[in-house]
Image 1 (cartoon, rainbow, N blue to C red):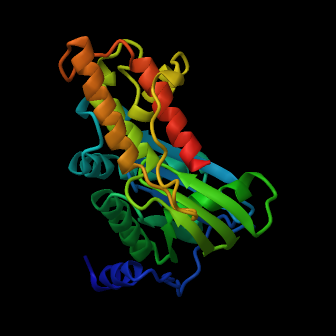
Image 2: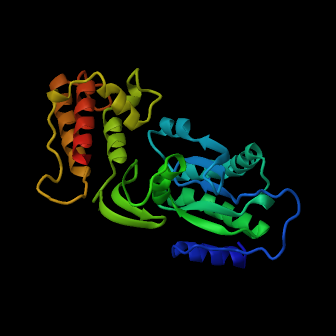
Image 3: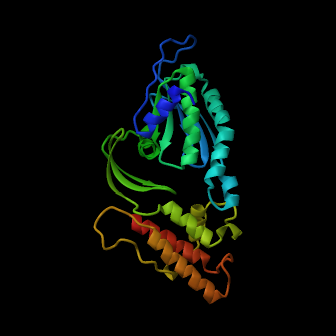
Length: 295
C-alpha cells in the first residue's frame, strides 16, 4: 500500500472523513448531478451501487454468499473475505456499467468502514482506497448502521428528527436520528443481537435438516416454522423486565430456549441433531418472546 492509501486508512480508523481533491478536470460527458459510488462488504454480501445527489439509484450489483455459508451452518469470516476478494472488482464494474457511468464521472466513493466483520470490511476498504488513489476521488467512510437508519429518506419524505429501530444479525439499536451523522442512542443490546440469537437457536434445533428449511438461513427458518406453531406450548421468561430503560438482552433468552430444547429431547428420547416433534411450537414461542421483548 502506498503512502496516500496508508494515510487514508489511518484517518478512516479514527472515524474521520477523507477528501482527495483532484487537481485536473476530466474530459468527456458531464452529469448535471453529483454521482457517488457506494461499496458494501461489511458481512457476507458484496454490493455496489451508483447514486446521484437526489437519491436515485442509477445502477447496482450484488454478489450473494448465502448458499456457501448455508452449507457451513453460518458465516465463516475467512471464507467471506476470500469471496469478497474474488468478486468485488466484477461487482463494482457491473454497477458502473448498468448505471452508464465511468469512474472519471464520479464525485466520490463511499464505502462501509464499520461496524461489521473486520476481514470483510478490509476488502472493501482496500479496494476503495486503491480506487480513490488511482482516480484522485474523494473518499467517504460510511457507518453502515447509520446508513440503514437513513435509507428511508431515499424513498420517503421523512424529516429529522425521527425514531429508528435497527435490528439485524449483529445489532439491536434504538435511536433518534437528529441529522446526518447525528444520532441520539436510546438503547442497544447489552450482549448479542436478535438475529444472532435466532441463528443459534436454529442451529441448536438442526433446522437445516428440516425438510421445509434446508435452504433457509436460521432466522428465516424460525419465522417459517413459527407460522404453524403454537407459541402457548412454551413460555419463555422475557429479559430485563426489572429494568426501566431502552436496552435489550438476548443471551439469557437463548439459554432458556436451549434448556427447553434439551428437556424436550430427553422427553422424546432423541439425540442432539435430530428434529423435535414440537419444533414448530418452539419456533413460535421463541419468535414471540423476541418480538415482545423488542416491543
